Image 1 (cartoon, rainbow, N blue to C red):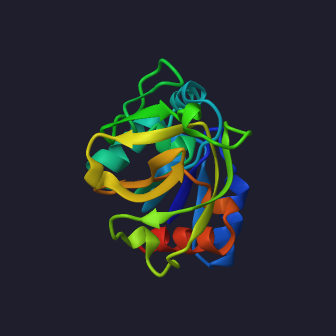
Image 2: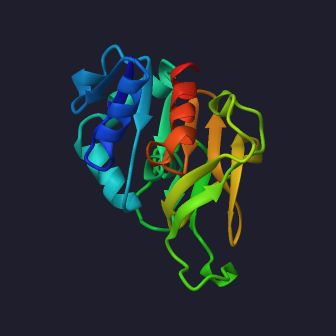
Length: 204
């Protein structure tokens, strides 16, 4: 059972609609007991790093999610800010992240950008698979995904990076460490590319 963690900072309905169209069982967790029976987890997120961390902590679901991911090794997919809070800290805030992946979240260097509209990085961009991974099975080489962010995930171990994108410079837009996955882009807004990726996650 895929379970979406609803802690008030993500587009939950879009994920539910996609998985229903794929005929894949899905439920939404809003309290700790809703996470019982989960075989895969999705951690969405939009907005500020500290706001996401505080909401997740206040939801009461952080402790059991830690247990499911770190002890039971349930696969989890963090999306956008949901990916960023997988790391240890962020230049955007002062609160510690979950620390599941050794990484720091850094602000995009706008001085490297040539376009007049600099931040946030918003719109469609190419995603290049750099480390073969089941999350990108059967996706076209020219796959494009929708981004909306001003900060990027900088993993300490470059082997955790599975896909790259470019905005001023290359950055990790998808990562995988053991059972923990993260994507900076929004698959729920990325048409058939995103649907394929979410289907791949269901089959991991």
